[in-house]
Length: 518
Image (cartoon, rainbow, N blue to C red; front, side, top):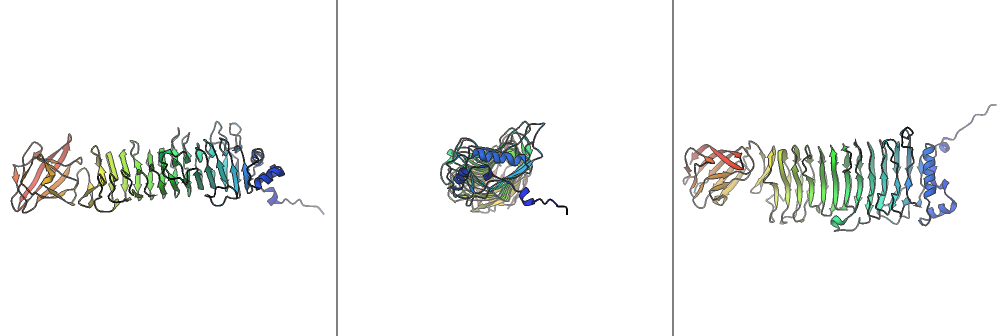
């Protein structure tokens, strides 16, 4: 009878086990979590063997002391590994805040080098597909704990804990496309130290791409203790359509920084303990910043004030200012075409110099339908729900505020039916200052003459002024900036007068449309 050769697929498909490359003494040290024996050579040999034989590499539970591991590969054409793939994985690590390193799989280095890095060749996309998961990385360096320079399409880093005891970054990726970083917790030595402000160090997740690339996603991660929790961009390349979503940062100076990005998305982030910096700093174009929860502590909740911030959408965010003096909820400046709608901004009433939404834009913007808590006029010296800079010239739907009322204004031909109350105190040296709005009720305690209207920076407004019955006489003079069909003085029954107001050369030129003595 002929014999049939049987292959055990479970054995032939088994991963490379790092323990198979160790002496018994090294295995004993690893299992004891002693970190007294350097096992770099054994670990590197296991990685090299796995790559050479198209297998995954498994690090059993234990504490591995290394001087720095390199993900192997041939990355210089004409020989490269772009058609290879491998998984590097461990046994998990338990609670990410437990830093004793006595359970799960721990790779630890006390040298000034990354605990793990890949190889950067002449073509940064040639290192194949890599998956790294279920390992705790513990570093003490001025370098990143994990450095990925050629982390290309469909590669992933997930279910890992990263701890930096030095001043370097947590995870740094200098080239990537279509990768996914998820379920990774990155902490540094200051993760539980408060009130350090700008003295903090490092970036939790840093992607300063050296070449144009896109579709990198960071999700379900936590970043704690850093100078900046997440930064996309800042290198020579442009990051396209990158996403930071459904992740957390805590006890950091800055939350998310977008630097030179194009069409980036920051969505559903949870930010607490921002230590004086910026929650989300948008230095990119066509960004979408939505549905984020930013607790108090930041000097600016969301910042978007560079000339190339065009096309930015800031929508549905909840921002707390707390009692931080001088804090901004949303600070908008620079480029045209930005949209700020549906955001909720709350504060501790009575705090000085807080601005809910600040706008300093010359161009088309949409700033309306935002909710402010408390909804009444904010108390505290210098505080205001919405403020438009004196140099701002906005065109679009914007929010005005008067007498505890927030109301929309269609700038550039504005018509608003919100009632705003004025008195003779609004007249100074013959100039009646008109705030945002279109309908004004004027009650004068003493006779007053108006020679000019000052309607602010919003041009082409239709304004109706009703002088109340019983008010002292108000005279509207026919002047070089107030054009009437003869002077008009109101009587004891009051009157109504309507103007079209144009803005030219920094002055308001007002033209009478109709008058109605009462």
